[in-house]
Structures are given as C-alpha cells and as structure tokens.
Amino acid sequence: MSVSVIKPDGSRQSIPDDILDALRVQLRGPLQSADEAAAEPRPTWNAMHTDRETLTARCSGTADVLDAVNFARDNGLLLGVRGGGHSVAGLSAVRDGMLIDLSDMRGVQVDPVRRLAHVQGGALLGDVAARHRRSAWPPRWVGCPRRGSPG
Image (tube, rainbow, N blue to C red; front, side, top):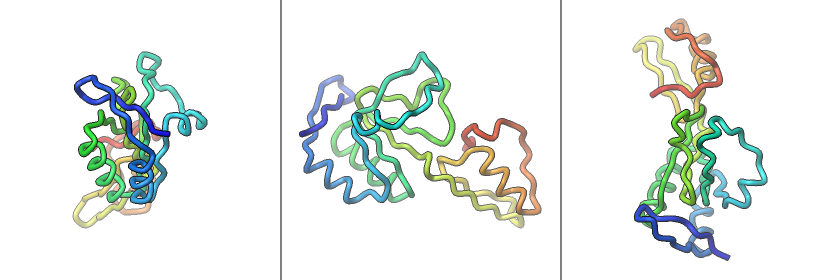
C-alpha cells in the first residue's frame, strides 16, 4: 500500500511502501503516515488551520532532519516544519504533504562565558529558561514556557 501526496504544482503522486520503508530505516525517529498519526491526539492551536499532512517525520536529531528534507526534495513533496511551539499563522500545517516534526529535539546548551546558547528546533521557552537557570547567565525574556523558542 502506498501513500498519496500533493506536489508543489498541485499534482498528486503516489509513494510506494518500499520507498517509505527505506526512509524509515534511515530515520532514528518514527515516520508516520496520516493514518498512524491520526491515532495520536494532537492539539489544534488555531482552528483556521486544520490541514493534515500525509507523512510526518518525528526527527530525533539533525541527521533525521537532513534525511527528511532530502527525501522531500528528491520526491518533490510539499514540506512543513513544526518546531516546539505552535504556529498561529498555520505554517506548520501542510495539507497532504510531509511534515518535519522537531518537537522531540528539545536540547539546550548554554555557554555562559561566551553568552551563547545552542537551542534545538523543538525546544520551548521553558526548556531554555530551565537550562539558563542552571548557569550563571539568566535569560532576558519573559514569556509562556510552552511557546517555541524563537531562533
């Protein structure tokens, strides 16, 4: 059984299971079809944007992101990215395309000497604040800890 996706030109393409299985083997995080993802509840942040993706790559690291982007490019897929928080504008909703989900990538490293933080794409403000508190360099923002960390 294959999955059907929409390409950027609006045409439909079928991706066979053997191609999807090859990507599943490459990724450390799971690759989910729309049917598998629908079984997991996910919050709707903005009811104006309810589109669902056909494929979701739940990336666990940078290599997964690279593999997912390359797969989408090589197969001409519409691509969306979901960071740790929500997208009020609905930019992480990609109808019948591929979603790269960074929500499991929440690592934060702080270098208080250089006053530099390295933050993964799925980190929330609360993750960043908690890591900063353990250093001698407190963060300089106030906000909801469940929001995504701005780049």
